[in-house]
Amino acid sequence: MLKSIGSNQAASLKLFGRYHKGRALRYKSSHLLRRAVGFLLQSLTRVFQPVKSKGQWLALLALFVVCTSCAQDKRPIQGETEFQKELNAEYKDASKSPLKDKDRKNFKGLDFFKFDSTYVVTANFKRTPNEKTFKMKTTTDHRPIYVKYGELSFSLKGEAFKLNIYQNQGLIETEGFEDYLFLPFLDETNGLESYGGGRYLDARIPKGNTMQIDFNKAYNPYCAYNDKYSCPIVPRKNYLKTRVEAGVKAFNKG
Image (cartoon, rainbow, N blue to C red; front, side, top):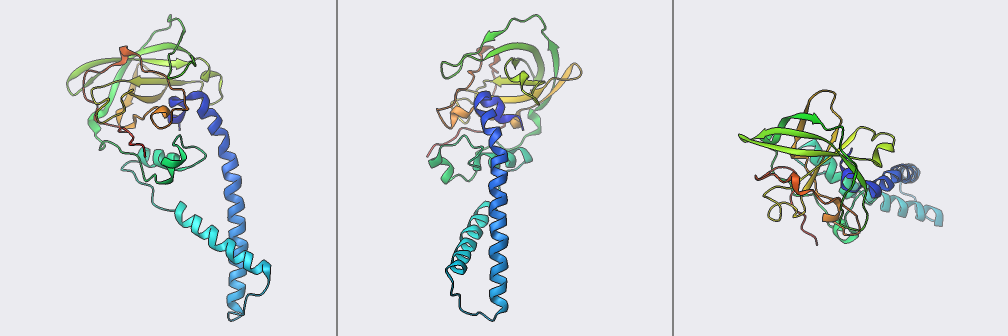
């Protein structure tokens, strides 16, 4: 998924590398579980013979710990849509989550606006090839290089709007993100139901002159959850003078 890359490109690429480490740890736990279960079954077939050796006690203890962990990991992921479920699963995962440890400990799910197809719009895409690169302001001293890639014109609830869409010049050098585009926006829910600093959307370079925008997939910058991240500040030109009641709501920190 692209969402975490949009919120904080540099930090998220580091998080992406932890995926393989997480898979290795899960395999190790699974292997231990299989060994412990095998031992338990052998013990049961011996008509509950007493467990005497230290190794057997350790195996039973490992089984208890691993099974408890598995039960916790298999709790249902909340979410009305696949996007919401994936985002909640990501934020619950310590190897991917931007949440602070204290917030992730009791994390049950992000708060979303109810899905509304009204906020899925088809925009006219206009390429702006002669734009100069610029240093995007962020919540820290970091200044990543961006370029205005194009303009999106669309209608939302009978009103006409326009947003600029951007391309991170450093990110396009990363395999898999060569066609990644960044769509940040502000709206009149900011500071009320949604995060005060605006929200982000991810996109890919369109093949034609139209692009679908699904505001139900709008998400918060990582710094909405943890101030250690450096997040692009939404340009004022991308302010929508309307309420976008879709996507992720503001996060209530513990």
